[in-house]
Length: 98
Image (tube, rainbow, N blue to C red; front, side, top):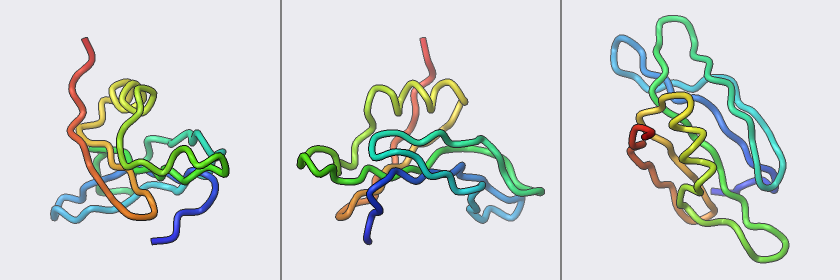
C-alpha cells in the first residue's frame, strides 16, 4: 500500500449488520491528523484509523501507536486504534485512561 506524505485518518464505525464503515477522511501534516469522530447514519463509532508516513528524515513509518495516538484514542473512548504504514497495518485495543 502506498502511504501519502501527510497522515490520513478516519473514524471506524460498525453498522447494525456488523459491517465496518468509515467516517469522513481527514488529511493532516506529515506527523499529525485531526480525526472527527463521525459515523454514517445507522452506524456507531468504535475506533480510529490513521497512517504513519515515512518522513524525509527517515523517521516515522512505524505501525505502532505513539503516546499521542493512545491519548487521542482514550479521549474519544475508542475501543481500537489502527495504524497503517507502507508495509503493515496493525490494530491495537485501547486501554481506558486512568
